[in-house]
Structure formats: C-alpha cells, structure tokens
Amino acid sequence: MKKQTIAINTPFVRRDVYGSLAVPVYSNVSFEFDDAQEMSDAFCNRIKAPDYARISNPTVTQFEQRVKALTNAAHVTAFNSGMAAVSTSLLAVAANGKNIVTSHHLFGNTLALISGTFLRLGVKPRLRDLTNLETLEAAIDEQTCCVYLEIVTNPQLEVADLKAIAEIAHRKNVPVIADSTVIPFTETNLKDLGVDVEVVSSTKYISGGGTSLGGLIIDYGTFPQINKRIKYDLLINLGVYMPPNTAYMQTLGLETLDVRYQRQAANALFLAKALTEIPEIKRVNYIGLPDNPFYALAQRQFGKTAGAMLTIDLESKEQCFKFLNRLKLIHRATNLFDNRTLAIHPASTIFGLFPERQLQIMDVRQTTIRLSVGLEAPEDLLDDIRQALK
Ligand SMILES: *Cc1c(COP(=O)(O)O)cnc(C)c1O
Image (cartoon, rainbow, N blue to C red; front, side):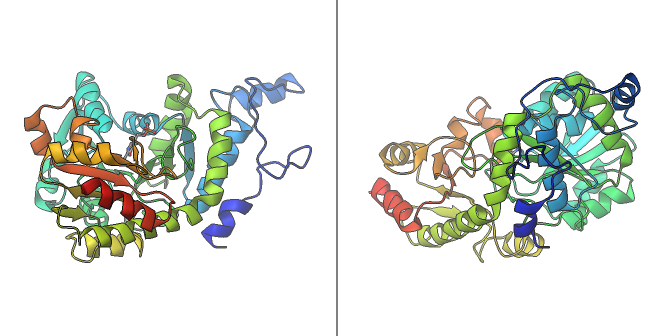
C-alpha cells in the first residue's frame, strides 16, 4: 500500500475494547497484571506489555507503529521533543574520548549540545564542511562515534550528499545519524541513501499546526547496539518518552501529513518563483528552484518536492526588521511547518546569542529572513510580502 493509505489505516497493535476508530488516549501512568509471572515477564521484556508510562504506553506505541509502517524502519522510538531525540541518538553512540564528526551548519540547540554539553562530557566535536568529502574523510578516525548531519540545513539550506557521505562513514564502520526534520520521511527513503538512524522533530510537519512538541528516532537497524542503548538504557533512565496526549495529536497529524505537506511545498515553490522577480529581494534561497546549486542533488534524494522552508535576503538588518514589522498576514514567530506562514530573522533570534564571528562561520547572515510556508492561498502570502516591502 502507498503511504497515504498506510498513514490512516495502520492496524492497532491490539483492538481497542470499545472498537474506537481513532487511537484511544491512555493518559494513565500504571498498568495492572493478572498474575505475578506476567508482571515479571513484562518488566523483564519477555513479553510486550505496558507497565509504566515513562517506559511504554499504548497510545505512544500506536504512534511509533505508524511511523514504522511508513518508513520500514527496524525500530521507532518517540520522544517528548526533537531535542530529546537528537540528544538521545548521540548519547547512544558517544562516550568519553570519542568524537562526533559534524558541521557548523546545524540547528542552534544541536550545535550548542555538541560543542558545549558533549564537550563537557569528554566527547569532542569535529565541525567540518560536509560538502567537502575529503575533509570529511580526514576527520573520521578510530574514535569517531558517528557522522551527524542535517539533510537540509537551516537557515543555510545546504543539502548533504547522503550517499557519498554514508559510503565514507561506512568504510570506517561509523554510523550516519541524520536529522530529517525539514523534509518529511514520507517523501524520502534515507535508508537506501545510507542513513543508519534518522532523527526528527515531530513538532514540525507531523504535529500539524504546532500542536505539540515531539521527536522521533527512526532506526534502520544497521548498527543494532544503538537501539539496545536507546530502549533499555536511555529512554528509561533519562525519562524522555513521548506523553500520550502528544502521541494522540501527532497520530492525527500523521493522518493529514501528506495533504498538508504537498500543499505547503507547492506554496513554497510558488512563492520562491514569484519572489525572485521582486527587486527589493536580493536573493531567494530555495532548493526547489532549478538555479539553486543544490537543486539536482535535492531532486535526486528527496523527489519532486523541496520542502516548505525558504529564505530571502534584503539590503540590511534594518530592512529585515522593517519588513517583519509591516507584515499583516504572515506571523512573526519561530517554529517550522505550522499551518500558518511564519517569518523570522534568525541572526537576531535563534542565533541571537552567538557572537558575530561565529555567525559568519555558520553562514547565518544579518540580511536573511526565514519563511516557513503554510497552507494559506499563496496569492495572499505574496500580497502580504509585496506590501511589507513597499
Ligand atoms: C526544531 C528542530 C529541532 C528541535 O526540535 P524541538 O522539537 O524544538 O525540540 C531539531 N532539529 C531541527 C532541524 C529543527 O528544526
């Protein structure tokens, strides 16, 4: 069956006692057992039965099952935020003395996690230009615990050549962990491109309208020790499991993901094309535009759509602030892939506490506005941008 069908028809792990058609929300903490042996079997993982909501919950299991059916992954685990998924995936491979090979072009909190938190624990960051495969290869050594990357970086919109990167990493028996938040997993087949573990902030496309924070680790099973670490150590001991109400909302989000995404990606392409015609806009960066340097690679890896994030560059930071202040329809807010279109000046907000020198290394520019394109009629969005530039 195709993903649109799977997204709404994955059978429940166990039929609900009342036959509920939508996934029931088990908002309880504890589960009762008929006898002591069954209880022991559940606690010792000899049978699959929920015992305590920090460790497992039927509503969350249902959500994980659907993601598993949509990705053909070996293991899927849901977390209470994207950052919980990111940090858990890294903790599953890292140890004192190891290093993480990655890039300066990372989501701000992930960069801080790797170059701050992990460094304090004795794990060294190796920040390299991942578009340069020779530099990448030279950075990997015996102590490298993973290559960590974002399939499309934000806000630079740099696309990773996954097949080439994975080939280099695998030659040295190093797993590739990829943050795939900016292109939904229903559009890609990252396993075929060599990704071992996918991490996703399900807060974004999946939650549908910014309803809830959540994260996913989608593990293709190529490095079996990773799932063992996650399921029997980190998930339980860190207390980072997804809450049941989140799983309910995000299961509903999954059901409409494809229609929402197709519309958002089409809107983004419409806007990107139209914005290149506006003289006040110095640069439009969208990987779905044929003259974008990453266009061919993006089409090859992600198919016909190119996501719903784009950036525009204006003359100066002052022009960016004026533009933001004049917007009437588009919202001044962070988050990505909400149903509404959102605009932000990344250099003064998400990256506002990084020194200017660091921003230059990260290629986060004072002249850049990031747009996350929503479900509105695209003509209305274009009208709002036009009037705000006047
Ligand atoms: C938002 C985001 C995260 C973090 O997710 P949260 O759900 O906010 O914790 C990680 N990576 C990328 C690429 C993101 O956009």
